[in-house]
Image 1: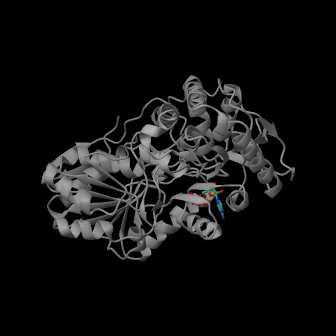
Image 2 (image 1 turned 30 degrees about the vertical axis):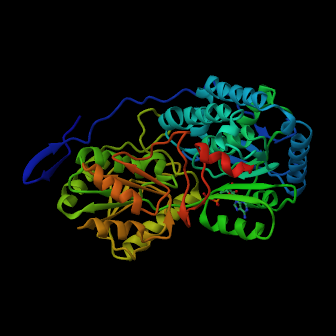
Image 3 (image 1 turned 90 degrees about the vertical axis):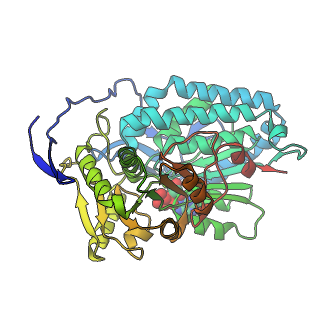
Length: 494
Ligand code: ADP
């Protein structure tokens, strides 16, 4: 440990140390098995793509190739949708709900059994710290299957006197920030309500969805009930446009969400969209400051800021702004950025080169617009896609770094004086997915939650997820809810 810097706090001089070095604690890769090449999971088996085309999936922390992934074209999507449609009509809609539940429970248990393998693959393919894959992504994915398994034979209690019926084939398209968890969010409620599925993972993170396909095959789920096709936007569009798809569930960017909404306008397809966000963490002067700082750090630097509900804006009340910002900077200095497979790492790799370039572009935009840039002094690895934890201070509401979703470890800081100003600023953006409130006063929390145009409002905590809680947005963050009883609704007709 070496003394490296001195900082001033409230007139006091306080030494702190940023020379702490943890011994490397890399998670082992020995227990995972990956194929060199993955086909498409259609009708219960892996098949080659009709185009014979494959693309590489790489480890964003090392830029090394991990495996080749099949690129599905319209013909493959047609096969997958037809398999799902046949399985729906011939098997799944006739399967008694309590039998459906057994399959879903089995998938949940198999995810738990293979948790370590799934966590390692998630981290290798996506760049997120192993601690998060291990403690958040994989357990929550299993929990979603457990939770919705419980609903399968209780739909009449979820919708009393309504006779809920499945819709048919659900086309589900997911992004790269929580690959396995998003697959669980989509597949579990669809199966519980009696629908069959064609799911497409994001092109940069297909591996855990394909591992889930292996689990699904082993679970004995009837062939064709879940199909997983890999590929790029064109593959996604083929799913959206297929006439036998009855419901589309999409999580991803607002731009693609708008394209999908246009594409299915005028059809009878049901749609849910979970899109971007630009959440405000609002810190009042009566907040527990240290706890708030931890929450802000978790809100924006968790998963490299690759979280649609990330707390990417900080609104801090003027009286405590200096101390909050100072503590925030101190805490940022201690964050370990680097090898995602190391159990000490706080901030792993940015998911792809394109995403890193996008974040770097926003950092330039912030500086050019006149905001003050602050980055931690950590060193970044020579290889791979990494970004330092970043703050923008002295921002104004019109700055692009305040208004637009960056999807990286970049926090825009603003101050406010009154509750009204905080609400005004928090709501004055195109998005409305989430928000955080930090205060000692319950009355303030209740007052604000009713006025925030945000689907999720956390109070004195941030980024907490649970399968029983509905999640979804207002405004350009989309519509429909996933999770909880509300998450059943998009998959049934009443
Ligand atoms: P992100 O910015 O998070 O990568 P995208 O919206 O680009 O979000 O991607 C989310 C998912 O949508 C991915 O699986 C991607 O392949 C898919 N996708 C991209 N373009 C389209 C499209 N036009 N139609 C359907 N799906 C698409």
